[in-house]
Image (cartoon, rainbow over all chains, first blue to last red; front, side, top):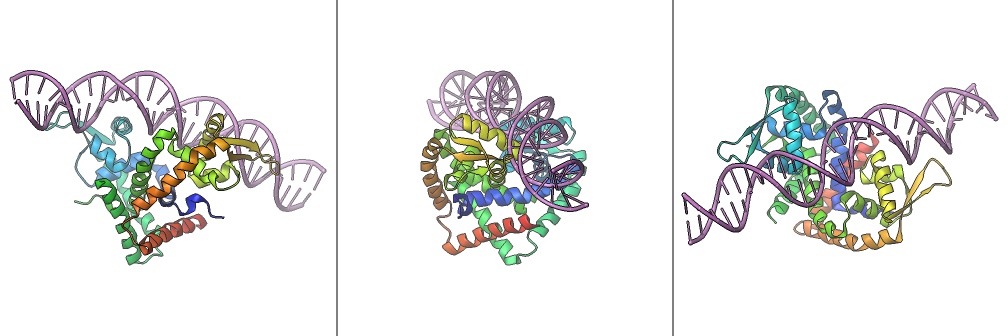
Length: 143
Length: 143
DNA sequence: TCGAATTCTATGCCTTTTCATATAATCGGC
DNA sequence: GCCGATTATATGAAAAGGCATAGAATTCGA
């Protein structure tokens, strides 16, 4: 007997997400990074500094939680915090050299992990799913 | 400039999942249920009792966390706990009458919310995405 | 049927998150 | 330029979660 959740979009997304990221989580352990820390570093790895609020929206963490996470990461030397000169309410978060060193090998592993997860799908299928996920995001953002 | 995460499957899944369930979360607030409580009740709503471990796997919560959540929910009268007679290591969790009353309107709302999220996709697209998500789950389960 | 190995849940300690709100800076209209 | 409204972040107390492990029941092989 199928349960309610078995056909429920929200559940399928949560389950697929949990499965994929839990598998990768195991690869994270040796580096000592938690999942939230990894997400922050991965997000900051290829861009410039972001404000607390902007970063929180991207990494799917609430603002007060990110404020605390960022300050722990700053204490650990993974990121650097600075007040935005243009808008002094803002705190900018930037990846540090040491954060960059920590995240570099993980980015490679993450890409490899994704390839494994998707290895049996065609490029067209992968593109289709990603497009639908992006579209779901875009749509709900503007609602 | 696209960030690393923008094309990263794990992120797209997490983001889509977060977006969809956060929207629904707002509808959950009046009932006083947290997302984990809602998931437990929705899972138990259409089936029989489940053991702590089986339920934890379904609702994507770790076992010690679920042990604590279930006991809070039992204290709140939403579920009932009982030792499994057939295997006395097991604790069975069953939805109570009051839990059922609490979850019934939410199940309707959840279905409506899902329809809204997916309203602009064709039936074929929806089926395709759900199939791929289920396949991702099936595959990683057996690895 | 005995005992080691396995499975299932509970627990304790510590870390992290949440919720509500305070504080600080900026914006907009006058 | 000033003031109320808005936006951005920080903070504090309480709740929840994570990890390691203990305890209890079951299983399986000899």
